[in-house]
Image (tube, rainbow, N blue to C red; front, side, top):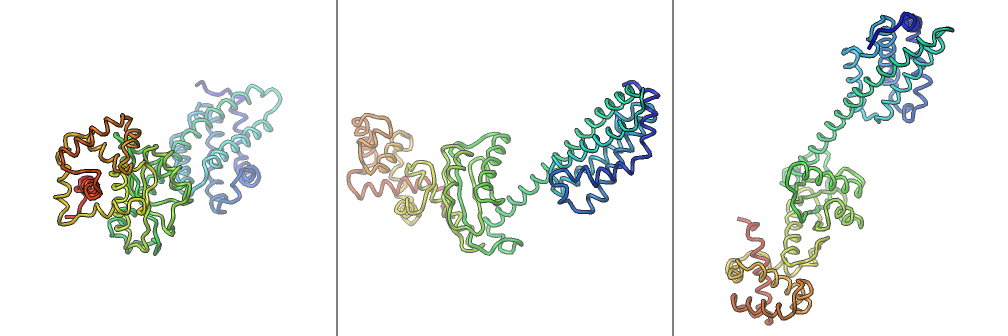
Length: 395
């Protein structure tokens, strides 16, 4: 950009002695009109913001008075200073709109001062300085905004990791001595997402959506340990799920969301509550229950039947002949879920009732289980549940 004209240089030089006066005017009158400025600490307003305003005014006017394009370029040292102040404001929690408001209002005060100082015949010089001020202001605001947003992103990432670390420690039973943790009770929520996300970006977006929904529904930053397949959420001081939780989480994670909530009376009970919630969801899934919120009472018998015992391996082996026939396993699961109603089973699977009869006969022929007999139906249900959960058994 070309150097400023002698007239523009002269106008800027005449304004430079007013830097302190202009900075005081900004702080005591103009900035006070910005929403939220009055609530800032006095030290921030009277010292740091005042010094930054004074530096910005002086940098522009001196650069313009020198006759070079310095006013538009903004020296690297000054730019770093503005960026460092932006980092401080982000760390202190000052809203971005308020921070940028001080810069735009300050530029307006400077423009008014130049206009007041201009003499007849200096209209072109004033226009030159206006262009230089706009260019300089744009560069400063871009740098300040970028630094502010980078710092806020870093702060948010650190806060998320702190919450994840806290949730991990509590779920592993290592958080009993953790400071700032409520004594109890805790609502422990297990989540399972139907379609596991692949790819780091997709997983991060899913987790952020779910975390945002949780924080909004519970009205606080909720510790959670989540990944692309689900995870656990810990809510201090709660014993029941708000009505809005399932809908909010389904919107964030998709219609295939499953969840179960249990209660830990204290920190030490969190790992067991998390295990029970995980099992409730597993059993509900194995039984063919529709996605949504599951309670222990909904799967009470199935939960009991799915507990491992000395005979678990032999019961699970009853369905081994179906290992290569997933359509028969799905039919068996649906038939038991539909209380052995062949027509209801046909409707759910989209089959003709005769096709269901054929598949049930094949199941009986391969396994020797007569699903019409209550005892054999119970064995088939237990075999389904034990077979789906063997990888999760203790030991």
